[in-house]
Length: 174
Image (tube, rainbow, N blue to C red; front, side):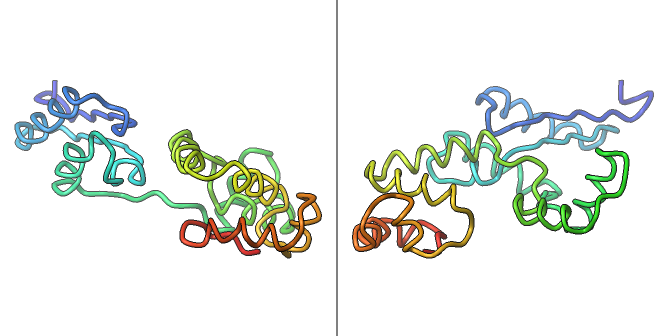
């Protein structure tokens, strides 16, 4: 087909692919360089690059031979443009700033891969620590530890002890 016109093949979510599919992609990448074929593969780098991902050894060699484009969050103006396109009118600056602040510029709030990773990591923590994190998440990005203690119905010293379990693994500001 690529002899008569250029061909684009898009393979999404390579982090969920099976071994045979990744080996086929590697074969195609090695043997179609002279064809008018563009192979595009998408994957979640935070998943595949973790040491325990079963496909890491197959995906990372492909990445080293590819041109990569990292997708990040949107800038505030881009969030405004997206809101304008979705709503059909220009929003005021306050809602744009608030959406950008709450989402970090991400179009979706949480991806399944991120959710799975968080659930795996949370399962390693003691239940009282997870309960404290759930309470903290409701309070937002910044809050005082006394507010967290009041909402969690726990003494401040207990909240601080539970927080100590998180020191090396969290970005929580208490």
